[in-house]
Length: 61
Image 1 (cartoon, helix red, strand yellow):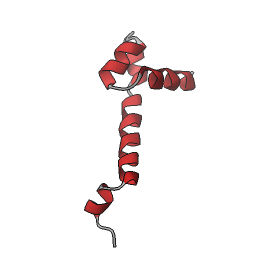
Image 2 (tube, one colour):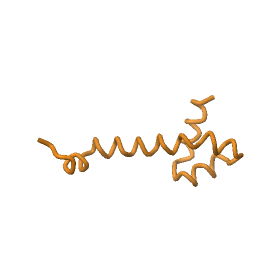
Image 3 (tube, one colour):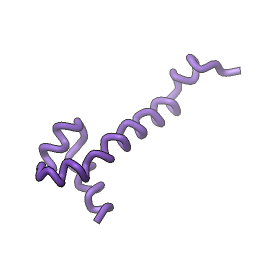
């Protein structure tokens, strides 16, 4: 049986963790745009690529 430590070393776990972190960061984008931050500023603050922020904002409108 696969134990938790072994699971944490899998690509699946890393993929889930990365996606979850990104989704959490993207939840902040609307509030940051309300504060009149530019896409570039948001991307730098959240350490996310500018294109990801742009695509997220397009999907939200």
